[in-house]
Length: 329
Image (cartoon, rainbow, N blue to C red; front, side, top):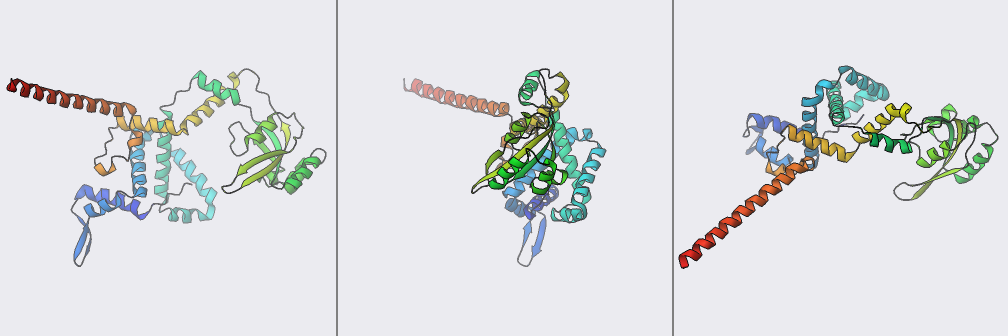
């Protein structure tokens, strides 16, 4: 669950907007010697980065819900809510409280997320070219057993033993991977991001029952180089062949997921939807808030309008100069 840690500034901004709709001069705090008005509070919190992020989220949620909220099935919301609640167990209520949410407001946030996904899906068009690009690096699911350790000497010893000894037992007793409790059993998917590419590529080359050589994966944890060592045993491999037709449904899902997670695509969709919804920022101090989502067309039109204005001004100046010249003559 993505905890929505609403800061005081975020909550304050929402309150300020609500109060401002009623009366901009309304007092929200009174004390001896003065008051704090909605206007004063709004001016104070509106430039806060957290508050601006919250406002952006409010705009996105509003546009998505108004136009795509009817496509969200309540069963989807309830299913996701139930899964999250089960995942956190007894600490679920505490997590909600820390996020400043209730069960109802969390369900609302789930609906917001699903409406946003529906909005993205409405703009996705998958072409044969997209499918062919996915197909080039695609591999059907394969079942393997693996051992993962971070000590090189131990890894070399295990790599030797894995060729002849019980792989399942070695994995259960030595592997640091989460699959150790299940004898190292893992299904590798083409879209899997939990395993390093080096491990996946090595696995795909194995025949059923074959054990890989030691696979070394180098990384960086922020301050030093790290190394993780893997040994893979192929349980069931599968060749994809040359015909992608049987895999089209899966390829389309992969292509769709990739588009939906692409930042540039999301920005383009939001720009189009904001334009369609005629979203305008009325406060000059917040004009940059949604600038990233403005369609390029709108920016271009503004540039053209500015150039036209400049030309008109230049022509007026030229006309004035000509009039003065005529008067002199």
